[in-house]
Image (cartoon, rainbow, N blue to C red; front, top):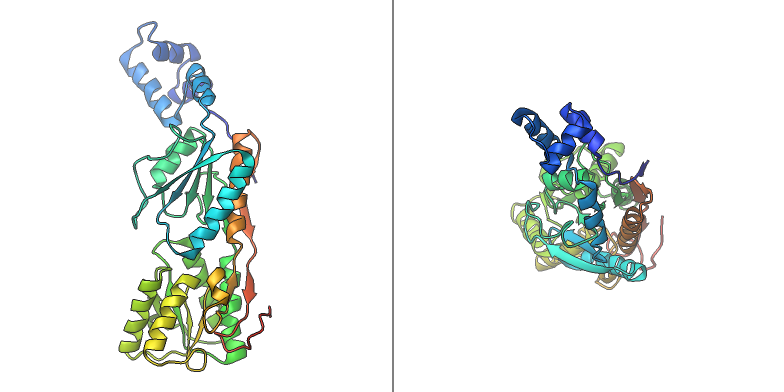
Length: 342
């Protein structure tokens, strides 16, 4: 499905308000008195459609900033460095500057630090902008591309994401089939994070397809964060929960898992196998080298920019770009040191 930018017209306002185009014009220009009830219907329609009169629209269009905005909920860990590199390199090639805003919050922002007033378009990372603001920007046809997030229902906003479920299912199936692991911990990412939700779906599907009952006490929150993962693993160990493998949710969390296991003299992978997701740069250098899922993080950033540039140029953009992931086998699952794909 393709997505285009179509601005609402004065005809759309007239139809929604149930009046003539001339009446809408009179209300907008305040040239001739209009019955207040009718005028209010017109104003309501204008607000609902986020209609911008042609003269104002031309003025807005002429105020090109050559700047793209990027919204993150929080910038941390190796993942974001890879994503930013992809975004920046593609934007430079297209002749745009980058303006970044991090909400530094567990909740998406309601206010508008970036938008039509200071950028030509926005790249929005998962859970960083309230649905109401997404709807407002979408209604005024402001160019938007989402990364790792499905748009709210009824909104045709391009999405760039990765194949999380299949990658997670392959990863957990490898632990079960090749190494006989059956008590596998899964560390969830932040609440509402779609990558985490799909990875958990893959984890559950792998257990089910191998006849292993799902055990809720083996699923805990690691937040895609080293310290949170460390604390979660410490609690599991102190509570005496039995497990023989850990799917850490992502590679950053895997570092916290390594620390917690080594503090209790658990040997990786002999006592506990550990696997991650993303294949960020450090994954091959930690000891033992981390078995993980390779995600095209930088390419997600590049593709998000490409699709946004298409919108800025008045061209069609793809509604969904789903990028492939690949299993990367290293030592932390129990395999040999040579990196291979199954």
